[in-house]
Length: 529
Ligand SMILES: Nc1nc2c(c(=O)[nH]1)N[C@H]1C(S)=C(S)[C@@H](COP(=O)(O)O)O[C@H]1N2
Ligand SMILES: [Mo]
Image (cartoon, rainbow, N blue to C red):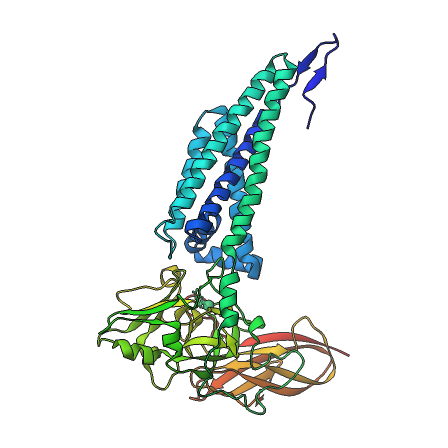
């Protein structure tokens, strides 16, 4: 900072003018911080979900076109959500600084801009699913306080600037102090209070305790991983994916905190009797274990958006039967607490030979928060976006020609069975291996019928049948391996699967949109001498 008082040659002093634009911009940023802090405090009191930054972030998640979303995932990977929030934050800071500078130059223009920002944030909050009846209160109170801070701060800045123009160093100094004190205290207060309230709003403490305390009844039937199902080969994926390693895909900026004691599942729409079940009601229907491989439509051939777990749950058909499904329905729209929806063919949920379940546990423990605690759906053979709704709270029995799910207007098919696929886990491209005896190994899946065989072709030679690990069931992936005498140089390894109905994995390459990737993986490995 520059000193305000400069000595002049004749011995008198002249008060230097402050850099008013910069201070005005800063006032704008401080006002916005006050807005957010007050909104967070009132959100903590009346409506935890009414956080402006998160609501605006979620709104953006929902409106950005698919190619942009894919670009964000490519650029930032699993940190795409953090990048988005940082982007929203940066945008807000810049907009607030502009509002401050404008307010200094044109009285009330900045205040109006801040007001518009607050109203847009309120609209974003109110359009979120699960916005409570009082959700409008925090952002509007925040906006009022933010505008007040801006007006008061800029008024003090004007007084300082005016005094600095004169020769009265003392008045200028006092006005400067008043401005800096007011703006500084507001800034520090907003940051401390705002962060405190945000942490409080995000706190999972009570729900985490509820999850820890949860004692699920023992499953009536269990899945045993057969002998020979899991080979321990360096670089090969284990047959059961540990919860911590399981891929995560969802639109949620913050993981929903759902208290199992207040959670309800309602079955509505084209049913004879709409029903509502508590967690205890659902679990009381009896638990069984199911081994199912879950796959994301965004998984590229050879990719890792796929995992296999032992799920504990209740067949969805049993719950639908209680409600009584009406004859001309053909789809079930499942909805999560955060408003996400998936469209699942009714037949996939009522089929006696296909175990579509409400899962409450994953690999022997209550569902992790990221994977849908307390209840999610798992449907064998359908991509996650059309079946595996996490934090599920409502099923609407309906028709495909009447209702649409979240991804349907965003470029993905309304119905999407998982495409049979196979991939090479080892050797890996870019990791040179030593010549000699090498295991080529990977994973393959072909829900719902199961994998019959996996073949490998080296350097475009004959297809050689590989060895398969003992399958857990037809809904779970298998490992495959082939012993190879690797000679020095570069080699292509291609892989393809065949299912138990005799269908060969589709060779034609397809992108992930609209209904999943296809093609045979062909990877390049380097063997050193
Ligand atoms: N509530 C909710 N459930 C959801 C999603 C979502 O965005 N929100 N994404 C779906 C998609 S696209 C997939 S692939 C699976 C992923 O489940 P996982 O994160 O447990 O691996 O969840 C599905 N369930
Ligand atoms: Mo997905």
